[in-house]
Image (cartoon, rainbow, N blue to C red):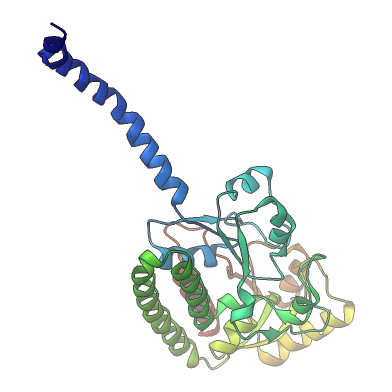
Length: 310
């Protein structure tokens, strides 16, 4: 009787029911295990986060720390953002302008914080004493941290991110290398496209509200003749204002280029006095649908071309 119970239909039915009941638990356990092994990257600003996504592909989670539209100069991490970074293995930062990420390094025991400034050729700031906040290291009081605004430097950022992923995840090294090769082609074509579009300008001189565009202008044949705020929040002195007025008249300047992350209320009297337009360039991007690092560079180039090409 016992043998019949163990081998009969009733026993088989119970066995199958047990398997069916256990399947979700096994499936959930496998999914949780895979998720725990999944690489998570983080980047302080949108351009670096977008570059990381292009190299990593869809199987790797990339966390963008600075919200779109926010300024890295005045940003403070929230407890929720710190919790979100707990699973990050690598955090990529620009250096100087986003050194606030270093303040929570002790709270992120799994994360290696990688400063990308070490892998590009840095340009000196336009004026001595230019800095990006009280936490800025002395190196970045001397060098401009906005180096991603040159597509060639974007390619160097991509190269470093790819090398980190190849070392951390050798099983998918071929994928990362292939993604890098394809992305390098796209950035090289974009670099030449912007250079060609801006090379024919008769008047290539600009006045900018904030000194963020030296890499862009140097790469694409433009010249910054004056900066309204040499550091965020640092208002120009009377003699600086006189120089700005003089440069506008001397070079036939038609517009001042600003950024959406910064208040330009102090600039309004000058705009009104001289009849200048205020044109917004966005060095950080991520505020429009389906934005990308490449689209951001192209959009800024087009905005400059529209004004200087008149």
